[in-house]
Length: 414
Image 1 (tube, rainbow, N blue to C red):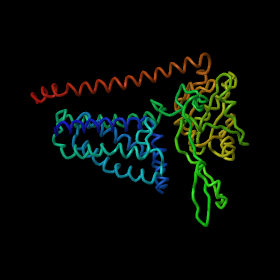
Image 2 (image 1 turned 120 degrees about the horizontal axis):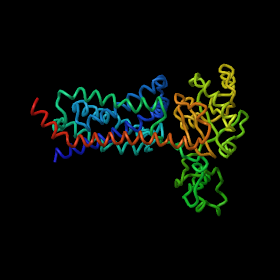
Image 3 (image 1 turned 180 degrees about the vertical axis):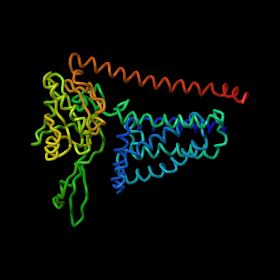
Image 4 (image 1 turned 120 degrees about the vertical axis):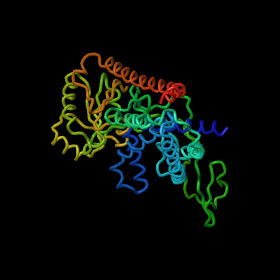
């Protein structure tokens, strides 16, 4: 029974760490933004410049520990790593649940959104599993001979950093955010018919003889004129349906909304997205400027969206010489739309059909001919890469299942 519980604990922790490290690792900028939120909430602003480095290390560490546990390589490192992780994060998530400095914990990136209390309760069985596995760590037999363990662990460590490096230099391989390719922004902002809506209750505050009491509309003292009205508030009693997108708003410098005109634009519309111009990759704007003139010739709409103030935009255009127009939007929104500064989003009738990192901006001739077919082909290529990664993982798991037989033969001759 002890060996069985140890086996269950190992696999529970392995798959949790692998999943958590992978879904955060493919979007390292998203994890860095979450680190920045926590640093701001706890008054650790001086650590914010290192948020990206923390993101790389944490995501790779989780994935590495999970892979070590799964493959039973370097068991001492894996068991200690899992135990220390849970020893730190179990109490930490309790503090986060009590004080709620940041509403979304970010433990599974954007793949699974948990409340802080949900995260804490999720960590309790994981913490218990790590303690049990730590106590009975000697019962975990290594899969491979000791002579191979260093090389295999080194290979797994390299693999652990690959999702973060790929996600940073490209866009996330899997986009869990509401602005993924194929999303119609207007539809994602609408509320379908028949879904439950938010329900509110009106609370009335009345005062009598210096004593203030609260009432509802059903029991307020309407027959007793000695009660004096003080205040009223609307209190949410039941949360209804929330659209995936609630904050997509684009304005010009005068504050006039341009959202509908862009989402209802006939044909294609290209959005160059730079959440902060003072932190953007300036060299890529020369290529964006070429795309702007190409789009103009082809009748494709083009605008750059930023959260930088108009004065900073004027200085930037004077310095870079870009000719395209700018619109304003919320910085968090722009960070959510595309994980690149700058990045490109291609719309057709308000539907996202293409997204690019500034390191992968397509040549101007890409936008000639059937753009939609080209975008579909690119997405199929990304899906093929994803399925290849899944197949490699499946083959690795199959190798684990037959490993005891092959290792026994190897040990026989060593």
